[in-house]
Amino acid sequence: MLKITEKAKEVLDQHFEEKDKEPIRIYIASACSGTRLALGIDSAKEGDETINLEGYDFVVDQELFEQAKPMVIDLSPMGIEISSSLVFEEAEGGCGSCCGGCG
Image (tube, rainbow, N blue to C red; front, side, top):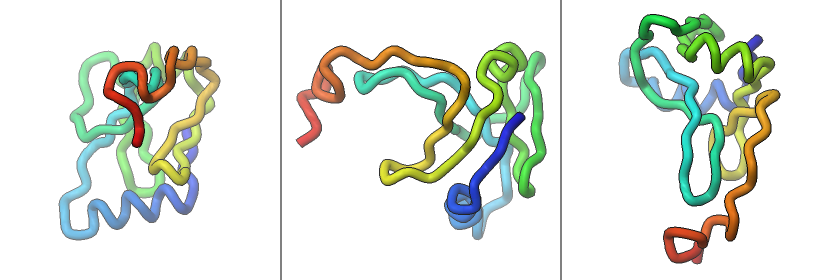
């Protein structure tokens, strides 16, 4: 199951306002601030699940989808965020562990 909040949909609507809508991939991203689910423009591949939601096609690896559902795409103070049933370990040292800190 995948849901998107109205606020997150508004951000996508603004992004694609003068562009053709393209498939949006949900994937696992790793950075010095930790591991999380993220969004990126990408086409569907073999082994993907495609979910049409609020006029957008979201693609996600079927195995990841089964492990992560339910997923909710929402807007946080830091931008679009995806919550799911997956639990990711916090990165040691937070955002300052590899990139010199946040400020």
